[in-house]
Image 1: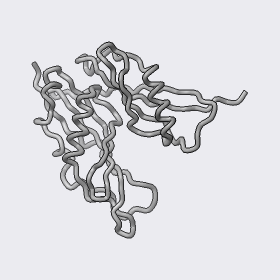
Image 2: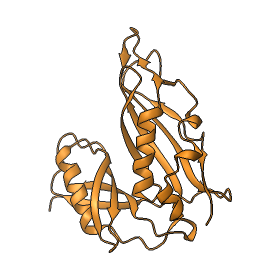
Image 3: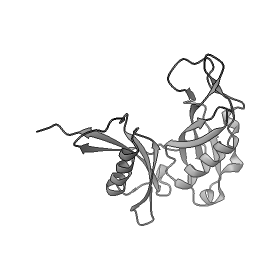
Length: 212
């Protein structure tokens, strides 16, 4: 059985903030590479040879404490995605972002890391699925495609959907997940020919049908 270790990636680090002037961006209090260690790899994932890269966004409150974690690129396994967010919410801490007056404000932080095999190979990226849904009229507030994460049961059928990045409209997000549950194809191959993954990211775009 191959040993599994975690590889921390410094690539893609970015601090995103609300619109408007900003005096001070978010700043991690400790090195992001220290937030997750080899010892954090869940034993059940090790035993099954599961590995993969996770891209995430943390929402950070005015004290510098994350209060939300969203996966934007899945490892391919729900267990690893959920475990990653649990660790990040527990350990990531920031000096809060501040507006020009010096008042702490909410902000977001994005980064990525990989759960990788001990041979040093980099986990492959799970291709995102793109769906397009035609609607008679787009509601006010629709800003972007809804980014969802779908989980598949052992039978291969989707059994759960979560919106990770909202479209801007709750009702559209609900429809997005309904379409994902109907249309998401069954996974057929794992990462680097490993176990068949059980989770995919699905981007659902809504387009207004031209009036006849």
